[in-house]
Length: 107
Image (cartoon, rainbow, N blue to C red; front, top):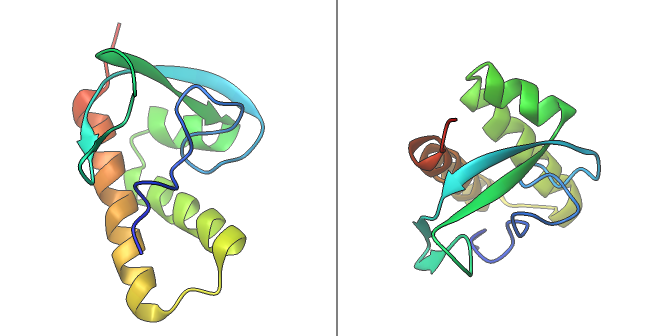
């Protein structure tokens, strides 16, 4: 199971980290490739939307907690998830967040 095709589309109506529907902040980000697919379908830059909780975690560099939150929300929506798949999914969420950190465009 790969999350590359399930991760919300940046710029949508929900948090791009946890899929919550209460977007409060946008983060500029250069495009990057995950699982062989560009994150932004058009252009070299885009914005990642964040809810209140995820924005706080990003702003405070609390990446493991952000990954845990994103994974928990995903598992709740798509579960049950086997232990094997849970480990792989957590790793993928962690990788996406690492790539986001590396490609984030700070003003």
